[in-house]
Amino acid sequence: MDPTTRGARVDRDGPMRSADDLLARRRLILGGMARLRVLGLALLAVVVAIAAQQVVVWLHRPLLVDDFNRPDGLVTNEFAYFNPHDRAAVRSPIWIATSGSLFVRDNAAWTGVPDRGVPGPRSATRTDSSVFRIVTRRANFQNVTVSFSLLIRRFMPASSGPTPGWQGVHVFLRYQSPDLLYVVSVDRVDGVIVMKKKVPGGSSGGGTYYTLVKAQGSAVSGRWEHVRVSAVNDGEGGVRLLLWLNGRLRLQAVDNGIGDTAPITQPGRVGIRGDYTEFMFDDFTVAKP
Image (tube, rainbow, N blue to C red; front, top):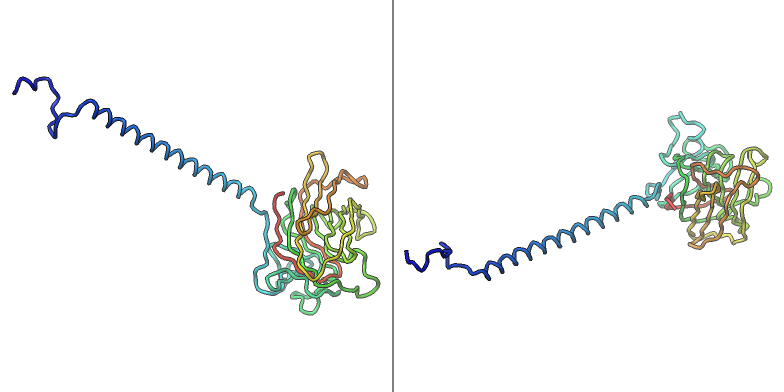
């Protein structure tokens, strides 16, 4: 061996590397690791953002939706309500009709042509929808917003006697029974919009109505309108009710115990009522406020 190479580092695969080469190589490796770390953090941030978005979507998903996109025909009727064990009855997994008949027509809900009389299993000759009452099967709706599109086809004359002043369409909230609930009139023939609470005991179908707030509006028929109502406990023992029509806030009230009767703070059903009115509705949605 040549004495001049004694103690020197020899690279058997090539020439010797200087200290500067080794330092540059180390910096390159460290730089690559740093870039990978930054990329990993960026990917983690994207994953976290997507997960957070999914959580928000999940938390704000509707509690109930019925878009009525199904073939024309009967959804359910009062015959099914009063004859729960009759095999001919038409039942809905979503709706209960305590009065009248609910149909699908052109991918929207429809009352049928309102009349008076007891309908059969298919409401083939009678609808009884002059007095139209439907509620959801689910009874766990508390702090919710109910929204839907509404089309009044026509206000019908009463079959006998004068037409009632409340003729039109109304929304049920916190429905406990036919005698304990909130009722919001959204389109009446006289143009009045009003919020009421009904409690047991009295001459109005076994109950008494207490008016929370009302205003004069205008009846809308022949064109679609958007309805949104909400009922929310206010945290102080009361219930706040709000009504929007076509995106505009029209009424609001707080029930703190009107008529010396407690606010209806517990969950209940939601629904729609019609009186001597042929109408359609669509995209019925129940969601958190």
